[in-house]
Length: 401
Image 1 (cartoon, helix red, strand yellow):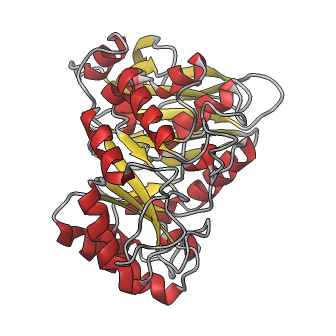
Image 2: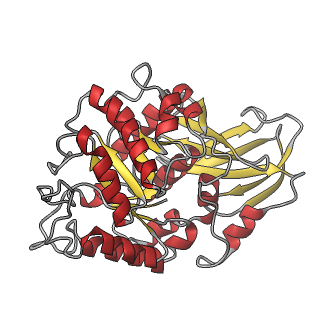
């Protein structure tokens, strides 16, 4: 969980005319401040991730990557120290190729060990390794080699791979059993854009291929459908709620790409929903599945959780009006004689004594969701409800995987 620069700020290096939004030390210092001071860190958003276009156009005389001296005058180590002092972690971007996607120096196979050592010496906590300007053969060698090089540094560094996205995301070109031993998370599909169409294209691909993708995910090795774009320009309020819910069902990393300095209160509320975050970070780490796809454009998604709980999302692809969807838990595959307590993840409303065989109706807004957290009433502990009811800045920090 954390924040990533790319979708919102791209490769803006014009710090003369646009100092507030360019890829620079200032941007990451200010985002670190916001994570630390605006309630994000306590919820688990702890990574401040630099993306492409941070480096100088040339390596130094020793062949090392160096940050752009004008935009990062104190260097990455000083930035990492600042981030760590705020109780946060720093991520950085590299590319397994001759150049990064933005045209900056890449990490060719002969540079893998050197770059891993450099990142560790700087105090980096996460590496996103892209794949522009590299061949399939180079990727097959380079991504596992970076795993070995990072481990050899002795510094814990989360490793995010773009390897499967460059190979179409599916077998036989992608071996997910192997990938889970190499990377902590991986990009399977194309880059998200600031639009609802982009979100839908990712959702469509992930759930059309859920039989392949769902078993590959688990604690320490995650499918990554890309960044949360909530708080930017392309999503409505309902669509923002939908992205958050669907990414949570997918057990996705929650990496926001937005401007935390100016984020609207309603977007912040969605992203800081404590029960949502608890569900996303569930220790079982099981990725959810789509279980119903109705002809009238309503879909239902289910994610099994720890303590015999579950998360359900009712999602509308309709664009006309709120839809009244009637079903029962038994029809959705729950044990016929079970009785559940249900909490609406967004409203907080609790319904007790819902029998699996009882019909119920949810009203789902266009492009929107209704999301439930539910558990058998025999389960007396209700830790997630208690967390949801705490003040935004209080309470125990959620378990991070």
